[in-house]
Length: 298
Image (cartoon, rainbow, N blue to C red; front, top):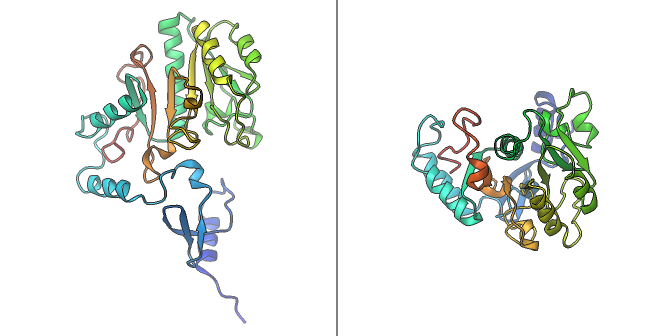
């Protein structure tokens, strides 16, 4: 008797044959989502406790988000940044006023936004702090997860992400997470531009820092004239019970990185927010993205 091939198995087989094996998914083929539920290809219903790594904090296919996407998709989807468009400015104004910053730099993915923050931190260090050219350093934490680009894996502990992808990018100081003494010692080094940190570590196993760590870290960075950069791609947009994880201690970063849930999971949208002193070091032609700030995303 021939074994019946389910829709799910057919989909898995097709992915395995034609797709790069850079993920090892659970053997569940999802075909529909609504709110907190998802359904597989055979119609079995599940609670979604993963929420696409927090990208669908608002629930799957939120009607207001889907409606906005549909309406804009029928008008204009992409202009590139060679032109202005009639939605980006409104989006930028909303983001800046909502999160309390002067300017936002729109990108697409979380890793892109982290790379943007690294570039901004370095350029700020050279042009505002007076760090010698090509000498800027950024403090990061062990067991971090900020993405998988070549620069980001250079300061990762994840050997699956690192091994055989070198040579690695220099300019990073790694310290234990949630260790204020280690941070204070690292801040004593010359040419430090920024401290890049997840307010709660996600990929490492959801590690919550000691109460007061973020407050002390912000104060230490300020005293050393070093930027405090919060990567809230996973923790942001109410994932932890506050709008931002930093809000649990009422601390405001010098630079805020957002992604994933910014769009409700319907389209890749990320952003870096900072005040003018930082953001205005970037000039035309020095950074950008064809899709960053497109009308559909905005």
